Length: 416
View (cartoon, one colour):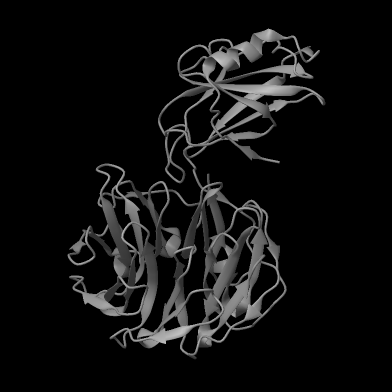
């Protein structure tokens, strides 16, 4: 089982005393583990070793390339007690090198000999570099249907949905299992809600609800219009958008209300900004709508384009810490805004239509012909290798597995 780092609140002096005391519990030192490795991820490092049953391992962490021989009295060194392999150290800074070492003990005894330090440098997922020229891993194709949405909840799983009601489940974003059909209509999007539930939407006003990603129930949303996208604030509101300006809202994912959007244009994307509490929807012919009252009333913004906008995301600009909205769409269209009212149309970095965009540790947009673009600012974009030429329809970010992408012909990619 993977466990996650919770920084200790014990003072360095207390930790040092525990390390050297060796008395009181009647325990003893243990030999250090072997085959210690550290594999960098996006803001994380996974540390693995060969463990001996019955031995309690302490994992020592420090910046740089040495842990100072497992000595927590040295400034900047911290320890994780009772660490189990593999151990995911989270909350790390990309671009900073960290060192890791371990020692062992039994029955509360003193720490034994420290292992040699191993080091790793976390880096952005999905971005090609000299040390990681192919950042995206392709999974086995999930049939031949178009996969149109993907989401994740820690504990349960990734869920991918698509054409003809296909649905797949995965605990790691790599190995997927087909789920029994609930409907045969196209499922176009899925979202996780309140860390415990999933909501999927699709053609004909289809809406499905599940607490575990396995058992699903159909819900009446009050419309037969096609639903293209859904977003959640993960607390008390979910909003789905679709054909002919359709917008429906739900506090619990089971009971839905239709609200007036003020447009008859198709809406293709929607997102929630947790900083301001605003909702933003985008659609055909450059349509942008915003709501600051939980989706009850919507105001149109001037986008500066007549191209179809397919998706929108909000993130904190990694360069200047300014909240930035990014909308993407036809012919590689990318628009940015810091206030939801004034939008800047960028020079397209690609001619391929972009179908989805998300912000996790950076902005990532995906689209036709296997297009993957990344940006830390929302303004400057870099094309990334994707290992496929199939259209990529949807992307999701999770704090554990980072970025999962699904698309045509059952394509699924993962960047960690």
